[in-house]
Amino acid sequence: MKKALAFAAVAELVTGLALLLAPSLVGWLLFGQELAGLGVVAGRVAGIALIALGVACWPGPPIAGMLFYSAAVAVYLALIGLEGGFTGVVLWPAVALHVVVTALLAWAVVSRRSL
View 1: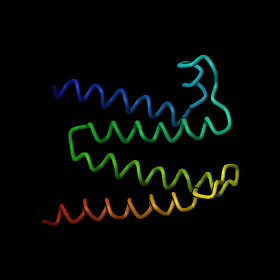
View 2: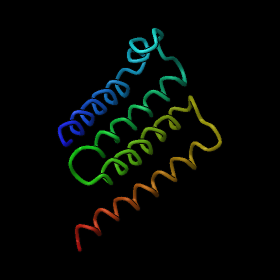
View 3: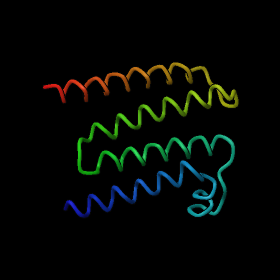
């Protein structure tokens, strides 16, 4: 069981990294069409989520996956907002929410280690 979970974790990490670095290529390989515009942004968010899933499934504390996801999505969405291309009304509240969740998760990790 542990080997299967480790294999799945690595597969999700690799797929997530591919989506993060080359979302259009992954779209073309999977669906026969490149991702464009907002599809690239959504593909990268999906890549971050798959990396987080891989981290959560790797032997170790699952909270690490959620912590990675929340921190990475906060940074990525903030970068998207600062570029000014895609900025909806809830973009900055979503960034703020992810920053708060990241801080709470980090606090939970730190407080758990100090026990």
